[in-house]
Length: 179
Ligand SMILES: Cc1cc2nc3c(=O)[nH]c(=O)nc-3n(C[C@H](O)[C@H](O)[C@H](O)COP(=O)(O)O)c2cc1C
Image (cartoon, rainbow, N blue to C red; front, side):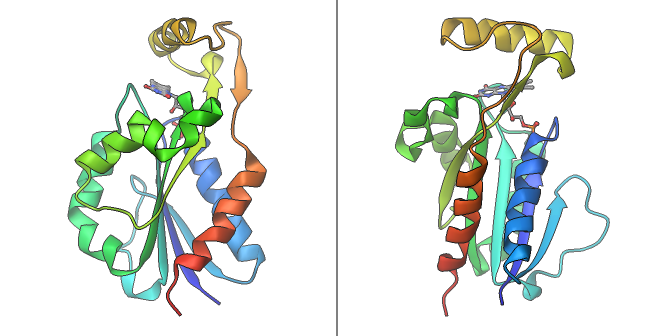
């Protein structure tokens, strides 16, 4: 049985849903899993407890929230001390070729900016949810979508996440742990 820590940054809740799905998958297989929002931590993390750390963050306007890098700068030693993987959530990845790390500029940006270089990476397509996004964000993303052949209907709510692939990713994490 492995002990796994899943950490995430979310703005609208979709990255949280993915992180919780990963944790639920591992828990259903008998592993111990803790799943925390990096901006909602109420206790200190007991890093020594874990065999594996999984960290996920969504892309906002071509980059990541500042809190993602602040957290990584503070904890880069602990993140690198055990088996680890990073997943990046964005809607450009609705196109399959953009789920290849070399083809996804946001993943490349993460690797260029992060002092922690994850052992393993994954790109996951996120969710378009115009009705729940602030008006200006919705307008800006619809404009970008218009230029990239994406959905522009202001009522569009589209979950692009391949949930079976999220389960497969969760399963693959265990192989990172050195026995
Ligand atoms: C304000 C805003 C900016 C975004 N910028 C980008 C972007 O530059 N590129 C991209 O592929 N997706 C972008 N997205 C899509 C998000 O990455 C996607 O909706 C993700 O599922 C959001 O996760 P969350 O619900 O955990 O915040 C943006 C979404 C919002 C709301």
